[in-house]
Image (cartoon, rainbow, N blue to C red):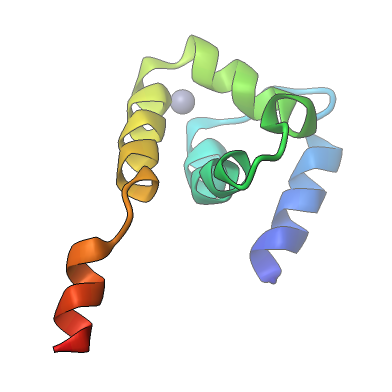
Length: 82
Ligand SMILES: [Zn+2]
């Protein structure tokens, strides 16, 4: 919940400036989550999208996170069941 408020505040703040890497990192989870739930993140968070386009470090984080969250946790579920 607090992350959502942070996001809203950040979105309001970042209309006129670029995000820093630490801000991007903080919101990356949420960004990927939104993207994978089918939201148009490019429209919702253009400053994030822009940063990921120009910053190879954050792009790498983003790719890694996407890879992790894109995989169904089959193993974990199977382990919990037994
Ligand atoms: Zn960055």
